Amino acid sequence: MTDTLTQSPVATIAVIGAGGKMGMRVSNNLVKTAHTVYYSENSPAGQERVTATGRSLTATADAVVDADVVILAVPDLALKAVSAEVVPQLKSGAVLLTLDPAAAYAGLLTRRDDVIQAVTHPCHPSVFVERHTPEEYADTFGGIAAKQDAIAAIESDDPTAKALVEQVVRDIFAPVIDVHWVTVKQLAQLEPTLVETIACMIGALLKESLDEAVNIGIPEPAARAILLGHTQVALANTLKGDNPFSDACLIAMDYGREMIIKPDWKRVFDDEELDKNLSRMLHLDHIER
Image (cartoon, rainbow, N blue to C red; front, side, top):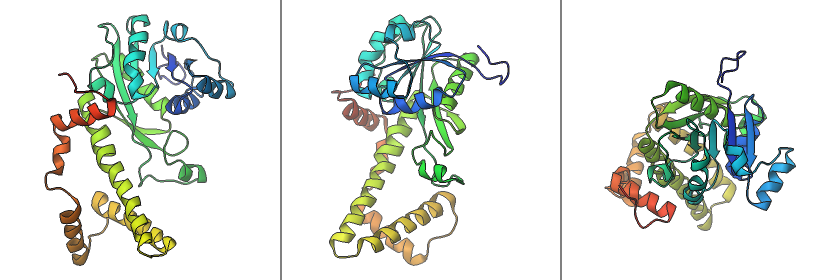
């Protein structure tokens, strides 16, 4: 269905796990759209969070029966069981949309030939995104005020289904600048490998480094100030090429790489290592191929 005023797809959407962290985030945005949205949540605490917003709860079976798009906003470890319950109840042509690629890549989701599987994940607001208001500066996660991109994958060549998924992705992560289309495997290589295994790990390493600087006696405000400022410079210089590093800095960087980084670290992008990583995350012995 298309909204004749905006010419954007309007759909019936079911949010399963509407009271969880991501369920609340996507629901808070969907309520602002023209979509017909049903909210389902099993846990009592989650149900309280949903009803506290004024949104009504619907039993899962009733929520999904006529849905064009079913969003599984549940933890990775629950996706196998939840998809097994939900997929048999979907109408032909419906889209099953998950918010993380791990379970889809690992083949844990229940499949039907006439149900389209799609995956999406927010990029979160870039450290370089232009911000103007206090709300935009405060929105580090995205989906509230700061603009962000999103990544999506769909297992269908139907342009209508792809357009619908893109609209839903833009709506649940709004405000969105671009939606970048990749394969499910490529999305898994981005999340977790690129952004969790590497980027988030480096963020944690920065925090440990700050703590160690304080442990050796450097005043915490001084250490924090120089680390945060130089982190922005380091990202700008390496990812945007704003300014070249000094010769002395390059020498120090080489020393850091020799001391901290394994020479073969790039193998985390290999298929075998990706499978190992996702097996750990999903508590599996191995991933079937």
